[in-house]
Image 1 (cartoon, rainbow, N blue to C red):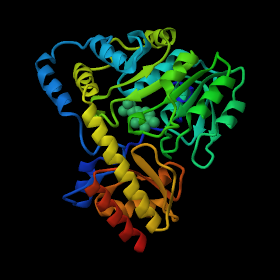
Image 2: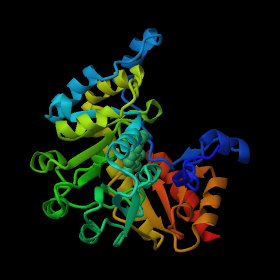
Image 3: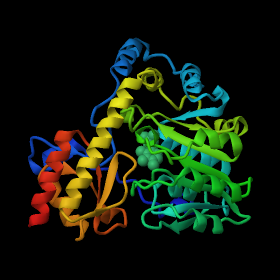
Image 4: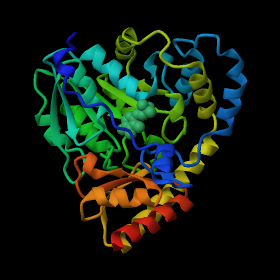
Length: 361
Ligand SMILES: *Cc1c(COP(=O)(O)O)cnc(C)c1O
């Protein structure tokens, strides 16, 4: 048997190391994972109540069209239900967009480096990825624009960018959308949008009213703290969402995921709390990095990419031995950086203490 030629060399996704594995390997009692941008404060109590209430229904298929969840989210975002599509994480929405819109030989434009799933799914479809280098860790939208040609079908903009944490502004994106041909889909991945209170961050829902080729991606995995349940969504014009829906598997999101997501949307207090704690955590970490003489990219999500000014792998290993899991830049093509998720204040302090020890060696 031969797999499709275009997938033969595809890498298998390497997640952050799981806590249990590190505990066992290194004989540690306590391990703090700041590697996958998970919410250190867990998830909404109201989501828990909704989950428990639905546990008796596991023998029933979920509502394939997520009607109840769509209604709540549509009202919250002030869009119509037919402008929403749900996936098993926004990862699956990326997959569905690629499946519905990319043909072999099509071109798709993305930053280098950015969230790996755009490239991965484009390659599965046999499309050609045009990767445009970041400038100072930020999407270079003018350069991305010049990479668009008549073969381009989709441009991916990750905002804030993972792994660097940088953002492009409303006017940057608006000017890009003004110039890109309307036949090119522009996907704005806003996995961390709820963390942001910056006045220049794009109001993407307003942009969607002006630009029919825009698709916005969001998720319940990050600030909502429901990563285990696998649920995220896309927002677009009804016609675009309909096309994506045509390639969706019938029951792609689970009952429990839908129930928890719906309840989580109504708990604004939990989201505000997490946003505030995250802001304090970023300020704390960045001032500590400055005290250590380290540079970092401006951080707009719930993670910071810091230049440790020496090879990342030994720093990653040193932190691991002290029970702290981060993302090593050596795996992300940033040989002297590490990416660290903002944790609780206690976790952040433990990380900084460990980093001080490792850098002092
Ligand atoms: C985490 C993340 C996602 C996907 O998360 P899901 O768990 O699949 O919803 C998508 N884009 C970016 C940039 C992310 O960081």
